[in-house]
Image (cartoon, rainbow over all chains, first blue to last red; front, side, top):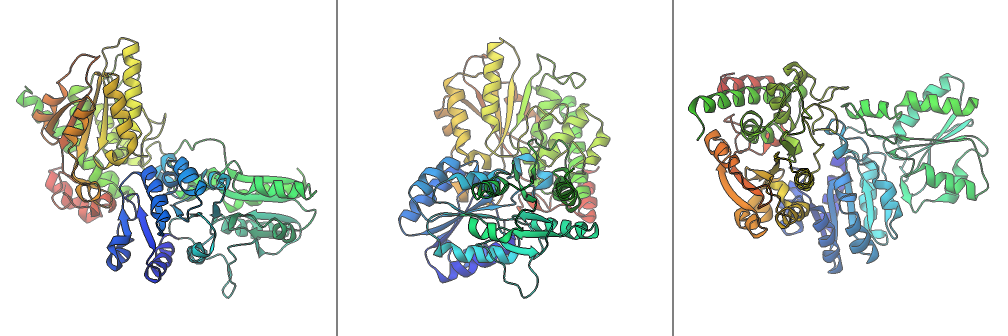
Length: 307
Length: 274
């Protein structure tokens, strides 16, 4: 997804002379082509995220369209106040790009895990929030930035993610998209973990449970009407996210359901409220978090059986 | 003045530490080999010479503390701790394995000898300042050391911590800057301009020394410059080379990222005589 981002950015960068790429000393060799095209608009500002966020607001005020980039927690938590005030409060169009969202930086440890970003960005007025599920969605999100009002947050994975939509099917980055149809349980998922949700549906099918998997890429604004339409009414709902506390997807989905008068059996499948104690690769940590296909299937099976 | 025999011993230990780092990196395909090599001698000078510590009693009250703020140099920290006796050297083989306590950046509460989790740059000097305050409150004779990267000094929080430490006269705090001139995507001078770190920290009421970060005589001398516990904190700007000790890695940004292959490892170990 990281490579997809730079591919898409290069296209935009060449077309639009207002686009800037600003990095906090990350992305070695990945922005060389941008640099070769127009070095004035490529800035390695150093390891100083608060300054980068503030500076991007200033640049945006002068007509630029900055894309600011770092590892997810550094470009969100580290400079949250600058994003809130300098960017969002002024409604400047800045694209905030967090690479390696969730547990994607695996062995690097909790300092590099960005698991609160989506909720925090959702809380900021005027911020659009995207959690693309694969490389093509990343390219669509980047292409969409210019047409959106105000600032945008895009959480990228890292590398090696598969394309989740079937060949010939256009990924929908704005509204909920049914990835697997089913009737017994709704699994709503955001980001690359939707792949694990789809695999979970296959496991459940073997157990005689028909799961519907609904992918949601744009978390803010959340298309609630479309979401309520996309779920099987009256059936249990599990919300799956590579994020802490269910705060990216589960809580807003539950909120939407409740306000619509729908109170299905509900589960949030998300990163637990603790730091991982033992080192692990991305996949090992996803298993620790209960976000692998087997764990998701098990939780959904429990939901359906009511046990 | 560091006795010759002790200097020789420190050099030998540093050789072992470098070999450990290279083996860890090759086995795990980890990034950050060159950053670990650049601070290896600083770590050895601290753990094997300057710091009062007992590996059998890692939380000994009167111990000197180290905040390893340059967290991505973790392989060198782990190797030093192992060689110093905090845990078995064999444990280094578990670096980055699923279930291991040895993450790519030091974790919290994971390993004996690791005082604080680091890895998000710019945190450690503030933590060290707080430790220094706490030690002053206890009227302890212990010192707190911080190893900070030069690129890490980009972060505003380093300025904040430094200003605080100078203002609060944390004379029991000593920071060593691993000044190798390179950061993740280029030369520090290109990214941040030519910062005069001596003037910078002096302007914040620190006492500043420069040292050769690969000379134990120079490091030992600088680390011994201890003022009163309530007084100016000490900054040692240690000139280092990223990738020091392996000729094809020195001052080469590729080796921030690239793990050594089996061939690279063999060549590197041969150079080290390990």
